Image (cartoon, rainbow, N blue to C red; front, side):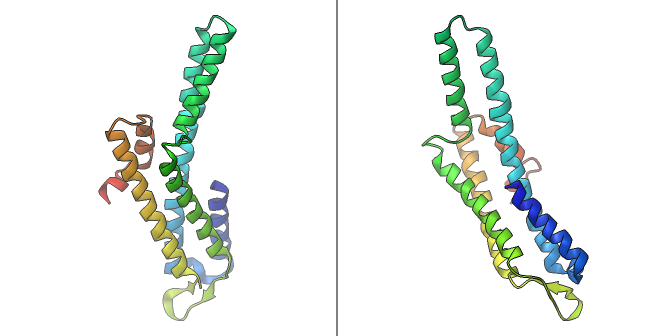
Amino acid sequence: MMWTLKDVCFHLKRTALVSPAAGSVQFRQLQLFKHEMQHFVKVIQGYIANQILHVTWCEFRARLAAVGDLEEIQRAHAEYLHKAVFRGLLTEKAAPVMNVIHSVFSLVLKFRSQLISQPWRPAGGPRGAEHPNFALMQQSYSTFKYYSHFLFKVVTKLVNRGYQPHLEDFLLRINFNHYYQDA
């Protein structure tokens, strides 16, 4: 996903260098859209890296230090895998949450394809340049924003009910400056 957004960034930078789009209102809007999408993707990556690669792994290593035989190692490993799947939102109960995340990722891919599918056009007046798919990209961004806010609400309710307390890490990351809470 980050590759997709880096490609969007590259495309926007290249466009700014070779056309008058850099001063365009639409160009600035697309940069803001990209930044918000990039924040969301980085939050998901950070959550996965922290909860699975760090927290779950540290718990597994601590458990390994206390094992006495091969069966305990096998149980510790099975528990590690179970926690990794659980915290990675890959269980059947977490499927609705993961579906929302997949939908958001699909919108990021759609946004990229809408951007690169057509070149910028010069616009009359002080607007600089216009993108033929700008309305479609605005719609993709609006849907992205709706899904990301919906995900925030769902995860907040899950945490408040005590289900999957590790999701507090996700909430802290995504709502660090109270962006979703204030919206």
